Length: 557
Image (cartoon, rainbow, N blue to C red; front, side, top):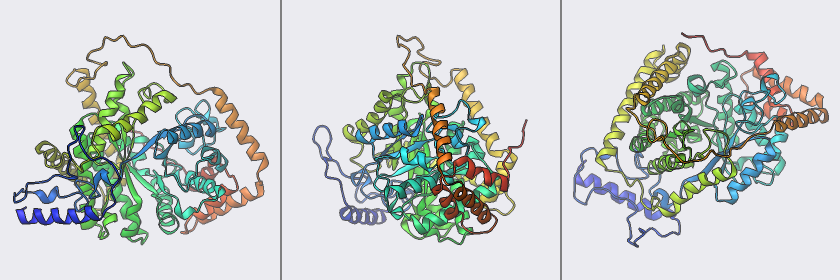
């Protein structure tokens, strides 16, 4: 790019920066020196390929979505939390919000993630252990008691039964008197990554995609600020994928959901802003920064050139980041504080929109109050003390970071072509479905995980406390234990709720849900009525399993 084009871009950025709202804050170094909001080539200088880097707030968004960077607003501190019953988790949420958390992120227990009630025989011993137990809308009432849902953004990490859990959230908001059209937050809903990596599904892919399409339509029409689909690379990376695989598989899934929206006749400029992303921040600092920057650039280019998006917000890749759970070690767990801080910093320098920092004890158990506070304070130290919020994309133009960004982008593009080649019609969706059926994704992830594990076992890759610097004076940690009484009490409350509800209303609502499932109509209103009647998660998912069947992963050897 020649000097005149670079200067024209700088002038465009300056106009947008001047017009944008900025925080009232001190944007100087610790020594008191003023810093510019963004840095680029010197005036009059040429920079070959600068159009691939650009300026913050304009296509291709390599350097971020906003001209102000974090000077306009910082990332949202969104700590992922959930354990025991709804009352216990509500107390943790209030602690997080009081300590400076900017939004909520709900972790559900395994029975809930699998669409089962707490008194289901398959739920025995699992209630409340890896997240909060939610059986019906009444649990949502308790989960968000004294937390105004209209004013707090809420993320929910659940995919298989995401839609019935979401309508229970809507019912809880209704009971608070909230205007549902003003709700804001994110629902994961990403069923592709379940078949690829996490394995928490209910139905065959087609019925799941039907529900996701219904939800996209409903939110676009009724709850425009709410993002009904968070495309997740986190679980793909935690399963053992490389950075490039995480990026490519995640964005391919996102393209698949774009194709789903288009197949429903939706306007890409209307529904695409409702798609968000969820990435892993792993321990290789610069590789992660490059991954995040490449993600924005790839998404913007493909949405514009392949899917016809024209509005700026439709081209934006907005993403949440969680530090890498798989990088945490049970050995010398206090070291996990350092790992988490480094990973969080990579997400920030990569321009994340919201962030969860893992607690030091999460490899052993659910976080204690103290470790959860340390994780929260990690973000606050980075935000308030380090100066990383002062300059947009401070590593932009680094030879190393730009080379890594280009390389990860090129690797991702090669993978997209391979996925398209798997299908019959050249679409991403067809390739994803065939790749799921044939085990293509799981095989490649398994191979990457195997290669990494070999490198650890041969000491080619060193992990402090595991295969390096193993002597320690550290003491064992006190960990959080979820009492069996949680399960007993949850089942007692569930039985009482069933006795007190209007069974005829529940039966009618479930029958109507099945009737709509047999048509091409949108299922969300019927499911919402079932939730209002206090139909349980297991009952709603159960009637749909009876109608659609369940998915069984083919055995592979």
